[in-house]
Length: 295
Image 1 (cartoon, rainbow, N blue to C red):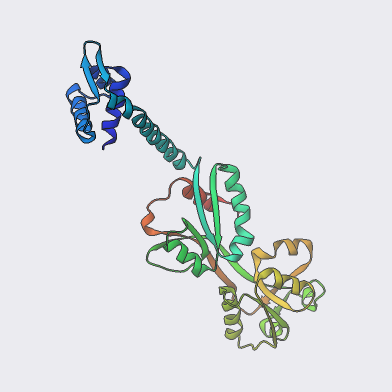
Image 2 (cartoon, rainbow, N blue to C red):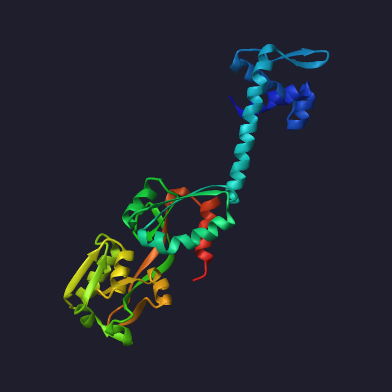
């Protein structure tokens, strides 16, 4: 059953005339009559009686009319919903983000997005970057945010660069120095977080490249726990810069430059299925916000 057949039927019912209905639909009378006959054949019932007063609905026509009108309203609502989605005035945005991204970067971005697009329903899932990539590939989310993992079916767009920096308690001897070497850090109790994360790998690789063996390590499962241990003077840590801005501003932690070693950085990107086509609606609006955000 074609939508234009239903539309033609409703137009004839409203106007009681094939000629007037054809004018409103901008089609010829023969075309409109052919559509009506096709609909009657499909339903197996005559829908109109042609009389001197015009076209009158049969019992079958009166029965079918409210359903036809409801179908046209539903299609109209669907079209309006698509237009609203294209303008990001409504719709859905499903995201997945790596833990550090979802904790320290995403909240501020989502605050701005929701303020600008209050009728968009936002859903967020979390997982390590490998998990985020799989959620994107399985079409469970529209966008993923995490470290750059290459995959032929996924398009990556850079968002920001994250750097691991050395942080110490404000009373630690390192806090009074402009910089320290990796060898000196290796003599301290090193606090690591989340053995399954790429940050752990970056930290271990940095010490290996410097030829430094760490004297002692404390392994925790998240960044917040690592920060608390450092604040209590239980060791030093290499933490993402985005995770310590509040503590640095409050003076609870101190940042010390590392001397004689390359910066420990990784790129944070958005991930999107390549076959999804050009981004539209909430996805396009969110990506635009990422591209134009301050910093």
